[in-house]
Length: 169
Image 1 (cartoon, rainbow, N blue to C red):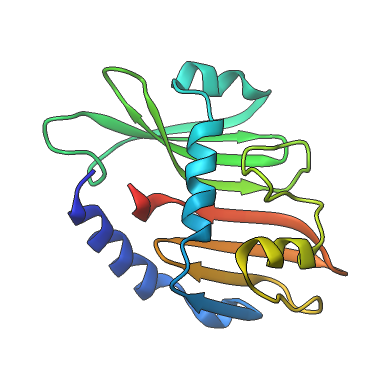
Image 2: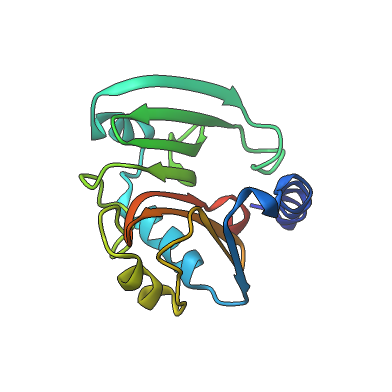
């Protein structure tokens, strides 16, 4: 992946992200969410055919890549919807190797983010990321390093997580 990706993503993220869309926005230089992307990368199967076997696929789309891979490598972006999880991955066309871009989890059955899980308390999640999250606000944008994470919670329990790993490649 190229430095150009980081610049393109940062420009898109900061220009399109409306911080008014979140009840709380927390920004810091920590890399804890980047570590969670690393955990996701290790937890995901290594090829796209294996990713498709994770569960019953409800919807799937594929788009040719124009900005993530180096010009001499052909890639495509695959969006796969499972029950309780939407996953967007970059797939190298030749090897079918997979890199996570975005994951959105709304069912506790999915354990791809290590200790970060739907169903855990917002306090436990805050301890993982070195933050004190309010229990009466949702959604919460945790914007750390290159990986923003949106946390949805109700009554102190996390019911949905969206982690964007795009800029870390």
